[in-house]
Length: 333
Ligand SMILES: O=CC(=O)O
Image 1 (cartoon, rainbow, N blue to C red):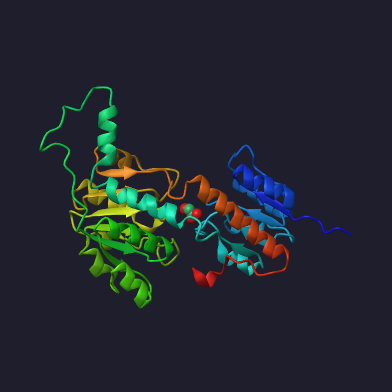
Image 2: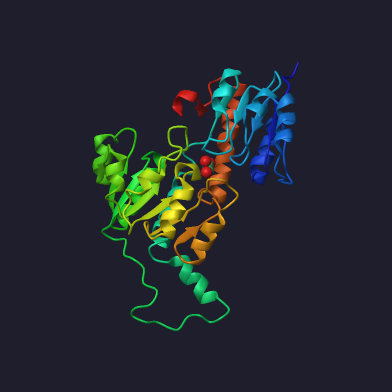
């Protein structure tokens, strides 16, 4: 007798190519209209599904895990970060989790570099000004719209995993000096190739950098890693860029310090209460102090297709009785 195809519930619209392949391989319940699923919808879905494919905008909390029926054995996340999933609760219920590392490294590093350039060089401010209706551009002047040079400055990367290293490779080409803080130093050869300096003490690194880039995952250990106390160590002429997760920075404290001129500015692609963005940040953006993007770090067609392909590989491996290549365990967080 032919084996029943696994019932795979996908919470958001995925690239057409991925949805077509999922329809071929699985009993796929797709969300072609891309209407976000409520917590109640998610609970209903996991009651009968074999596999749930959530996206990073879904909240797979204890309530959803407790609603899982006996068939749910795998949560194959569409995305890298898993801070929206209660990994411990799922693991305790015997549900495996997978993510999609590697496929968004270069795109996220590009967006990080874009923000590293955009904030000190006032890119969005200038672009808004030239297209404004009131003809606000008075013409070139030696002292007008001056930003700050990034060449020769010190970049402190917080979290030197795949994305942090990809940022370092780009930043070197822009003449930045690479410094980093990580749980562990990089292997000597990689450190040498990147000409990167390791700081065991995050506090000491923060006090000496011109630009800081947050590239670590959000885990219980990195929540508010840049706390109000640590932000006070940052130089008043320094900029902070975050393309990782909003929760890694105490956003209230950051806003206050930028408002008071205690930090020069920030480039943020992620926020503490996404998709809500603090009105104070919007005001700072209009004042040219911050550049804000709506969580677009990995938003390329290529990354989304590659992510979908990784999800499929993980589901297939699991269903064939193998260890899925991108298994996430609570001990990894
Ligand atoms: O932010 C994107 C991801 O974690 O995949």
